[in-house]
Length: 393
Image 1 (spheres, rainbow, N blue to C red):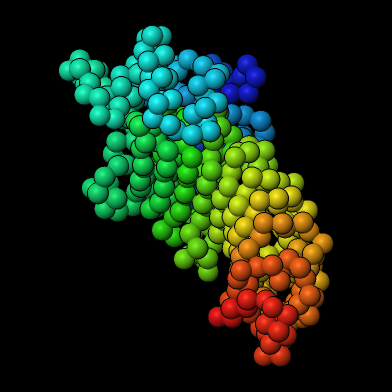
Image 2 (image 1 turned 90 degrees about the horizontal axis):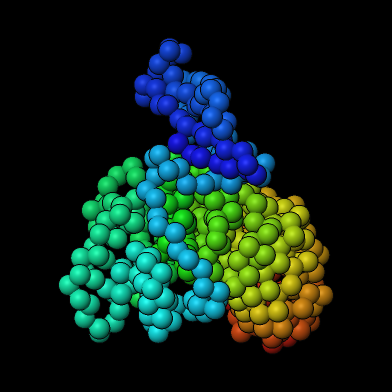
């Protein structure tokens, strides 16, 4: 079940799974919806696995302006966390122990159950017995949807998405989601993580699957999370699976959504970058099987005042030209902090070298690495003679 709202309207969408190998329509899986308090409507019925259709329907709603919201009948309810503008701003900047302690005291003054959990985790201070008991209750109530995703037992359970989280001063600051992500329980896991009170100051997030799958709905949930966590690092897709990439989706607004983002690594297909602007980025990596001229143009147009590390996989079947890539590295784009560039699968390495041998951007690099690129010995020698620290693999 997934519950959505748009304006004053509410829409519920749910999946009824049929027999695993159903051949008859009466044994098929179904997707139903209900708008506000109206009658349920059958939206889809078929014998193939229903996850793709269910995922696509949720994406259609999100792209249509609907926002996923808490379902009070079926999901754990978290106690509201009151807003303190100054403390919120400081915690979004850094999860500092002293600031968390002040925030926990303030939450306690306002009767927020989360305060007991934060107090029980507070450094060398030994909490009172009643605080420990209250923290245990809060953990049971608030972390229940995530508890079975944590620990070695969960990571070893086959066929399920896995969550590994790192806490600092009682708050989840880093999370990695992996395993089998093609079914709806992966969507539910991402949703539960992003709406959890302890993850409101999440700084690092990685979403990787054990195999190629459609990550677009998971990315949509990240891009529409409210409140948006102060992400510094986001990894989407697994570089080791780049030969069988996962679908990623639209990321052009990611810099607006996460203005403090310093590291973005994307491995997949169907990656939209129109309007890309991540001024705070220090590291950017894009590994796609076949880079499009539109993707490269979005990277060229984006501002990169702090970028130090750039990794791009062009792909042997890409229609990107040496001249287009030279627009990025030839000096036309301001890259004042860039020190490391890695290019994968560039079929026109020799031609590219002719464009960038005299580039101040390339000559200022500490490392210019070409992997699986076609470059002649003469072109490589010319780059090195120009003072470029070239590494060819």
